[in-house]
Image 1 (cartoon, rainbow, N blue to C red):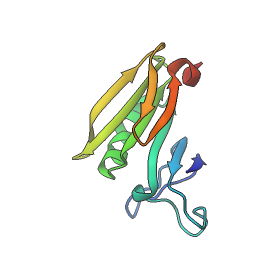
Image 2 (cartoon, one colour):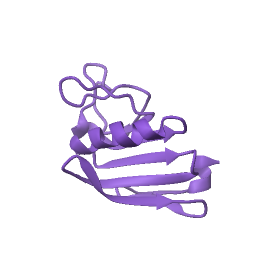
Image 3 (cartoon, rainbow, N blue to C red):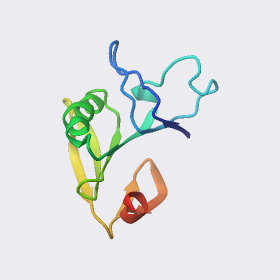
Length: 121
């Protein structure tokens, strides 16, 4: 897995959002020759405080439309971690909201288990 921090990803011809973190499939060139596309992405993570509305209303539908399998929205304002999965028709059909005391699990990484307070503080 390659961890990409605030680097652009290519979604369609005219969209290059810059998620806070993207967990990418390994590639020999480490994405130096071209930007990652939705097929290269395991998970996109957005950390939101003042950008929560933009991330939820603009970026999440964009990621869902591109069929990025998992988007994690770290909502610092409400101290909630949202896991968005099952993209279909420009939206994520499943949303799990985790609060302090809950454990984050992502099916792509079954050994990964993080407490919400480890993420939010």
